[in-house]
Length: 382
Ligand SMILES: Cc1cc2nc3c(=O)[nH]c(=O)nc-3n(C[C@H](O)[C@H](O)[C@H](O)COP(=O)(O)OP(=O)(O)OC[C@H]3O[C@@H](n4cnc5c(N)ncnc54)[C@H](O)[C@@H]3O)c2cc1C
Image: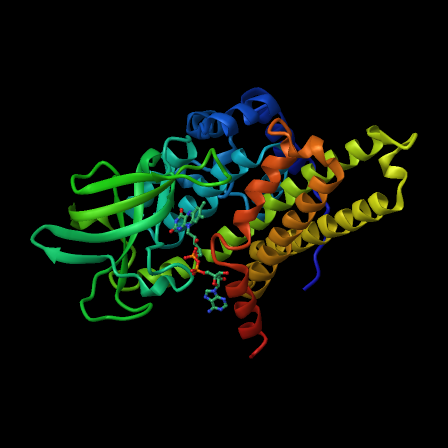
């Protein structure tokens, strides 16, 4: 498949909207403050909605703009470049929340929730991972038992982003007793303040504006309408949306890598040692050349995937590849960026140290790169 990646006036308009939105709501000093003080950007979601950014892929009948994934990816690239914490919350709303509802939500759920999501007034947290079920997510043990009028949920989830700040937890639980693996799992929309839910925040090294939670479910009672999608097919539903979240992560980390490269380049031009800018030394020049090549490669991979999604192609392999290429690009660029900035990068005030700390998550979060490589190999027939 070959694609033309040129963009038109409408797409340039979306990118200008991102620039204006970020300058107003999350300028660089505000991003540093939120990272330092661990303040999530939930409060800016309504403004993101007002700017029209959350409407992009939502069908017109649900209050959206009905645009395809190419526009989403371009916006994600730009948001990632301007401030990863904005890109990251955008992804949790669109790449995960919206695409889950659109892919397997009922007509009633879509009508109820999508207009709220478009307006920046709905955040859904995915509660999949458990202490004994990380990469092997289908080994989950949280169970949902049928009771009169609904379901009783019992179990534990770990590392759930946004859990306390979300409007709903999308909980994966085993609803068919005796089932194993991907079979017999269902998805439930559960308000986080339902009796029986207990949360503890987990301390961590990066992504400070995305709080992570350990959640206990002790006889949590929910109604029939909490079930999302088909009973027993929840794991398959989740798998069918993964290319959106992988594409989202790939685009946003590529944008972030672009910002890290720009910071390293600016420093290499300004910082003088031995009477010359450090960018005059071959060791630094070659590092920057390699960083630029990686960023260009990641960008092309992201665009190729976005255009393939928009064309309706089966892109399991392309999505896994883009996630690997982009996340490893960001780690490469931030690692070398730290070396180029040296003490200036190691300062807690530098943006580079934040990019570098945050980057460590992405090669194992949302499906580790080892698992992604297995997907690529499987798609090659191995
Ligand atoms: C900050 C943060 C936010 C998160 N947010 C969420 C969230 O919102 N919702 C949610 O449900 N989860 C979330 N997670 C969980 C995340 O998805 C898991 O950490 C991830 O799936 C990996 O699982 P694990 O950490 O248990 O690693 P493990 O599965 O224990 O893996 C450890 C290592 O072994 C490797 N490995 C495992 N199996 C294989 C194999 N078959 N072949 C080769 N290598 C293998 C892995 O690649 C990895 O390198 C989050 C995690 C973090 C740290």
